Image (cartoon, rainbow, N blue to C red; front, side, top):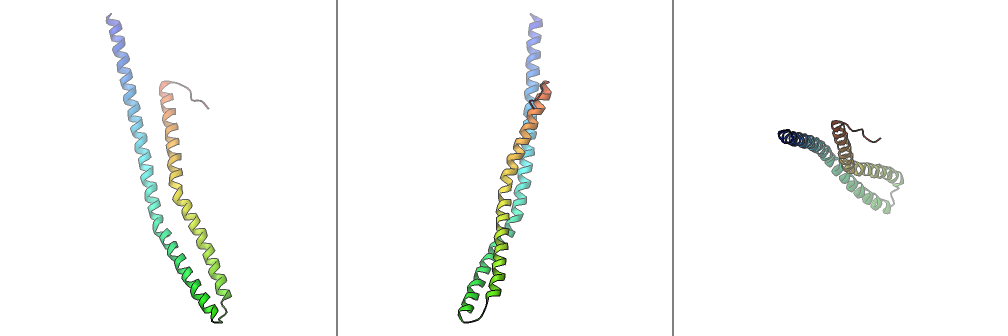
Amino acid sequence: MKTLKDLVLALINATLILVALCLFLGWQLMSTVDGITDRLSESIQSFAPVRDEVAGLRAELSGLRADIAAAGTQGVPVTRVEARLDAIGTRLDEMQTRMEQLTALPDRLIDTAMETAADKFARGLSEIRGCETAS
């Protein structure tokens, strides 16, 4: 009877140790994900002034086009300048598209980081249990 009691206590102790280990690993995983999220958020915040500047340049470019159009109606030839402004507008459009892609990047990176961390966590648990992971 004492042996059975000792066996049950040992089983409970081992289970509690494994639960504590899992909680610790989960806590480490979440702190890693939080760190990645914070760094990505800081990186994206550094793009905000550039995005605002691009928007300002677009507004200024629109104003210049209006001024040139007004000058063109007065008989002043401005086709060459308009072509250059169109080229600048195209470049600004491309920059804005890239900025929008960079703005969407953290969501994808966070998802990838979470999946990678979860995979590592699962592999770690499998190794602790002595199981082989499915390939």
